[in-house]
Image (tube, rainbow, N blue to C red; front, side):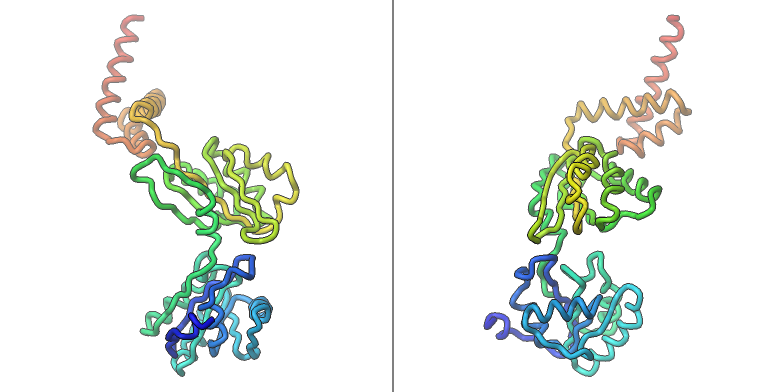
Length: 302
């Protein structure tokens, strides 16, 4: 703790403190010291945070805990700002993990920064980086590095299906989160990704943690095989699209173009093929003209 206590913690600053996502040991010395030092702790659920603090031997009076959640964030942000202006050190924690990532807090930070007040992040646990580090994602695309964080997909079936259709076009690694009561519906939707690999992280860092990688079309059966797999909180990593050779890409592109030309006018088919495949429009237009000429020759031969 000496390493943390010897550092500077300015007054009148907002501290964004990461807390464990399940395992109480996954908290930094700096976070513990800051929570002890804070004059006010803003949090999603005061009862949950009070229990967390007691687990670390930190005692805070009721007036030192301030509820700040998605239903009152704008109003509570003003309360926080008022306390900061008096010189208080205010810490903000979400129920679990790093604040402001698929949790309330972003509006709070925006309000505080707009007023020129310092915001100090204290890094720590996050389901996003935790699962990514264990997924073993390997990309074969030179331009498909990094990852995309989508958070929770829409809860309504039609909107979720549309979201998955967009994910099919995303070549990069993609991370999404899901609650236990919707995980089966999500598995059914993601099955449309076919053979693309998905890593499921369940109850990360907890006693019954489970991490498994399997093709997307096997997800519904995997969850159905064991009722325990439906319990807990979930993070899922959709692995990047496997690399294809130029020859494979050309074949797939032309097949898409020819299928569209068989049903649509030439310009419309080329436009759609460009949007679907990402191939250059001029090249597709030339290929379309050549295909049309070939079809005319075949008709003459008949």
